[in-house]
Length: 182
Image (cartoon, rainbow, N blue to C red):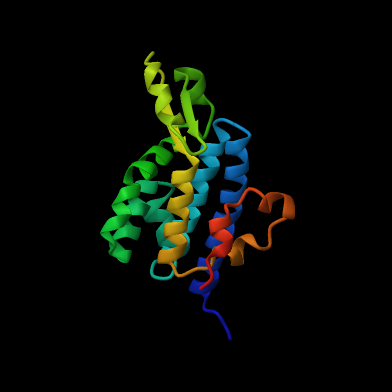
């Protein structure tokens, strides 16, 4: 069976998104700050574009949405038409903030506070230190659920993309991603 160019581009976005996601999870557990936030940003961006590439050209995705997660997220929610996805709005908004510190100038000029949660209350703990520095929050479990929701709405099997990873990197992928079969 021959795949269309759009299907190949969509697949390539899912490959990239899965690779970014695996490395993002590893970097979060290793507390590699702010890199984990940047990698998660790229992961979610690629996964969203993977879904949208079936109906929007790659060039249009680049020119219309760029790296702006809230715009991509709104388009994804609009196409999928599932109101329950709004529960991830805050996670997407918080993740989009990491784009501001993609380059070090902002960190040098303004400083930063980063809260990472591996499943508990972690991200909100930085709220107690209000000294004017920009605050960035990341919740790994919430981002796991977000990525799973994207895969599910796209009717894409996560294990098809994570299965080809190196065994050491696979250890950082949640079991829920291995179990889903479409």
